Length: 262
Ligand code: SF4
Ligand code: SF4
Ligand code: FES
Image 1 (cartoon, protein in one colour):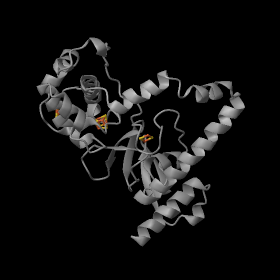
Image 2 (cartoon, protein in one colour):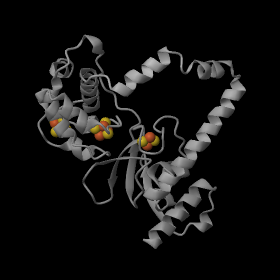
Image 3 (spheres, protein in one colour):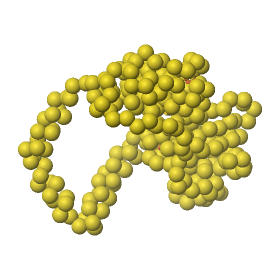
C-alpha cells in the first residue's frame, strides 16, 4: 500500500505542479484515439489525456465522478472485452486503447409531467422499446456507477416506479448503458421519467412546505435584495470565497478515498 500511495503522489505531482519527467519513475503506454503516448502511471484517464496534450472542451465537467460527462470506452491489450469507465475516476493501465464518448445521441420525448398519469403507463407510452429488453445484462456491466440497470428496466416494464427510482437514484446520465444496449433503450431517460412520476406521486414533504411558507412570508427578502444590489465584482468575489470553501471540503473527501485529484 505505501508503494502505491507513493506512485499516486508522484503521478499527481507530474500533472498538478507542472511536468517534470525526470521526477516520474513509473510510466505506462496508452493509446488515445489510436495514437500511442507514454504517460505517468497511476494518473486518471482524464489526466493522461491532458498530459498527452488533449484539451477537454466537451467531455469533462465535475472531474469528480458526479456529472457523467467523461464516458470512456476502452480495451486492454490481450483482452477481448470492450470496457467502459469514467475518465475522471479510472486510472490508466499499460496498453489501454481509449476513446472518449462525451455525448450519447438519444431520442428524448417531450412530455408535460403534470398531465401524465402517476403510474407506470407513461413509461411504456414514451419508451415502448423497453419491451424489447432481452435481459442480457450488458447495461449493468457497462454502468460505471455499478447500478443494477437491467433490473431497473425490468421494473419499468412492470410499471414499478418506486423500484426504478430506488435502482436508478445514483444514475449520472453518462449514457454508457445506452451505448451498449442491443435493444437500443435509453435507460437514463426511462429512469428519469420514472423518478419524476414517482416524485409527483409522493406528498410534498413538510420541510418543503415550511420553506415555501417562509419565502412567501418574506423571511429571505432582505438577503435577496442585498444580492440584487451587489455589483458584478462583489458577486464575483463572493462566489470565489464560496468556491474556496467548497474546494477545501472537496480536497478532504479526495484525500480520504485515495483517488488523488480527479
Ligand atoms: S442491455 Fe438492453 S437488452 Fe440488455 S438487459 Fe440491458 S436493457 Fe435489456
Ligand atoms: S445507468 Fe446508464 S447512464 Fe446511468 S450511470 Fe449507469 S451507465 Fe451511466
Ligand atoms: S468529469 Fe464529471 S463524472 Fe467525470
